[in-house]
Image 1 (cartoon, rainbow, N blue to C red):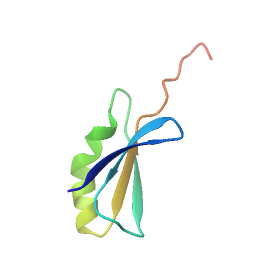
Image 2: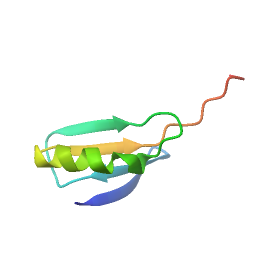
Image 3: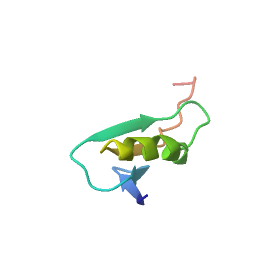
Image 4: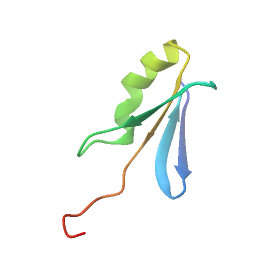
Length: 63
């Protein structure tokens, strides 16, 4: 599987799978990582999708 690390407007991300007109956006839970999307991306690729996963900015209760 193709795994391409990118930075999208300052946000670290991974684009998984081969080129496709269809894409899933994978958002992980608290304390997760963009790399956790690998297993999901493998299944998505089998169905013709790419997957984009990214790390959300850290949010603070002080905001």
